[in-house]
Image 1 (cartoon, rainbow, N blue to C red):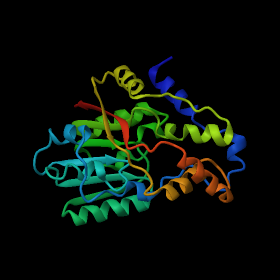
Image 2 (tube, rainbow, N blue to C red):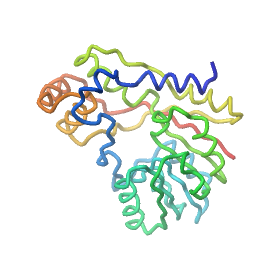
Image 3 (tube, rainbow, N blue to C red):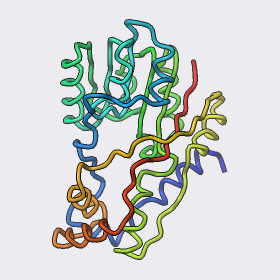
Image 4 (cartoon, one colour):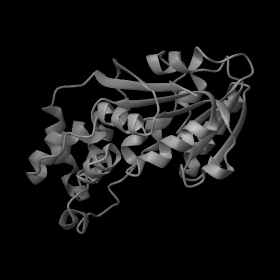
Length: 256
């Protein structure tokens, strides 16, 4: 099996069983905007360092799945032009407001990568943080990143699927065991098949999550396809779980 086919198959295994989806009171595939706003001071990281080290003053960065723009604004300066791509308009509104607050030239595109990549300009550095686990057809996603960069591509991702943190919840409320793949090493195998000589660095970073335990319970309940009257039950279960303060992350990067 090709590495890209394994990647797609592994991601498909994360699908919620249809009988659970059918009775879900709300769409479980939510991305709360509060999780994507950027802090006043962005914590430095290997991903930001790898992007920053090839930039000159006045260079540009393209942030795919940008949210509020942490990946882009962490490297401003030296970058002075930021381009954001996201399929949620409210994310792009945050991105634009953050650019204005920093006195940075910005441009935003509402849509999906790589489907809308033809209308999006090139940049010196192309970044995508915490997006690839949502991309089943990964080859074109990576190739279009490659074709839009003048200098370097930087991808940040958890070392395990972001929904892996909810594995105990699924076991407790539904008796379901969740998958463990794919991993950054699997993405490296895809890149190798594409003829891209990429680098992988593993590191630990601060945990980002919903702002408080009540918010975590609210969004977890929705992701679990549970009705509103079980939110307190989710909250009580979360109180029994160890608090995660760090997360295992990976940076994959290559030059063009």
